[in-house]
Structures are given as structure tokens and as C-alpha cells.
Image (cartoon, rainbow, N blue to C red; front, side):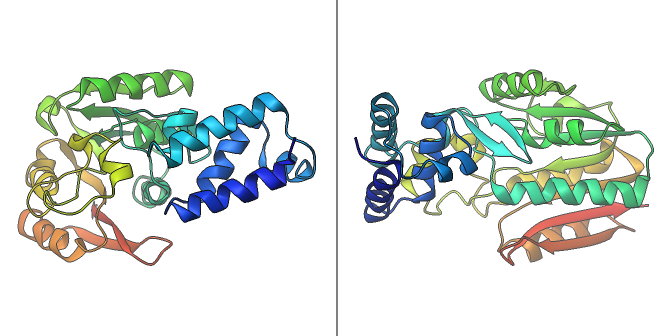
Length: 281
């Protein structure tokens, strides 16, 4: 049998030749070998066992030839140090969204100190935002909404598996939250313009309802910003993730609808305008 090193080298090149991320091949090897990165590194010159080899090759074929995301093959995505179950009913959590979590926790400390707050995640998908915030900050009580029953099913599984305590509500945007009040609103809503090109790996495997945000990609931001104060207390934080080229337009929508607020826009680690925060003290 070939060694782990030989198998990885051949299949990483296979991925590159087919315009796929070679990092996906390593993730598949880690999954099927049941090793962490350190152990795999130490085992690189050992022969790969037949069963692991066959399962790995099957996984690589699904990833490269059948265009299935690695996360769907292994069944999860790592997010903020936690394993979130993902499938075709939810958007796969992106690395950039981890930065939104970190910033929400930071602004919570600045604005609310260590006091107890009520937080809502609008359009929760896999639950990665709501469940992570619930786990990471004991003083946050989380509620999460989604219009998709199938997405909520996945989010509830993640909440249970990760020992979160999030309350989930089915419904469209802020509609199911009428009569409720929150201190922090977080949302990473669908933001791809309806006619914008989306690569096949995404469009073939992730739910359209979680991807597209109207003609300009801003429909859900407009709706949330227009109605946000109806479900927020006098002192609040709003936190959005958005497309890198929409920061100016979102700022304009905020200024039109919300007054006496501080607007903070931040770049992600790639230097792209990815996050907007609204603070009212």
C-alpha cells in the first residue's frame, strides 16, 4: 500500500487540476483516518491501511467528481472551536463569520459589561451564531429564528449536541418576534444578488433561501433595519455580516432609519468590508 504522504500528494494535485481546494483533500484524510493534524504529520511515511484508503478515495471522488462539499461528506464544519453538523438544508458556516462572533462578544463587554442580556439571531441556519454565543457567554440568553423548518431541525441538533440553551422560533425575519424585546440583534442574512453568478459547488449543494437577497442583495438588511427598534430595548447592539461591496449601502440604510446611533464598520482578516455594527447607548 502507498504511504499517507504519497496518497495525499496524488490527490491534492488531482483536486488542483480540477479547480478544487487541495485543503479539502487533507480534511477528508483527517476524517477517514480519525487522526488530528499532528498525528497525521507523524504518520506521513507509514503505509495507509486498506480500509482507510478505500473510504478516502470514495470521499475524494464525491468531492472532486461529484462536486459535493467536503463538509457534507464528513458531516460537519468546525466553527469557533465547535463542530457544527451541516447538510444540504443549511449554509455551511464560513470562517469570516467567526470574526462576527468575536466582535459581538467584544462589543457586548464594552456596552453591557457583565450584565445579563437577551440576544436574537435572525436567520440562524445551522445555528452557528446563536449556539456559539450561548456557549461562549453565560450572560447571554439566546433566541434564534429561521423561515426554514429543515434548517431549524439542524440548528436544534447542534444546540443539543453542543449543550446550548437556545430557543428556536420558526418564522420570517422579525415577524415571529413581535411583542418581544432584545438587547442585541445579530444576523448574517442571505446577501447574494439574485442574478449574481455563484459557483456550482455552492449553488448545487446549499439552500437557495439562505443565499439570495433580492435584486441588490440587500432586501433582508432593509427589512431588519427598518423594523429593528420594534424588538430592541432602548440600549442595543445590532451586528451584521454582509457582502464586502455593500458596506456603504448598508450604512446609508442605517442612517435613513436609525437615529442617535454609532455605526462601526470593520474589515475581516482578508481586508474586506464584511461587518457592520450599530450601537445605541
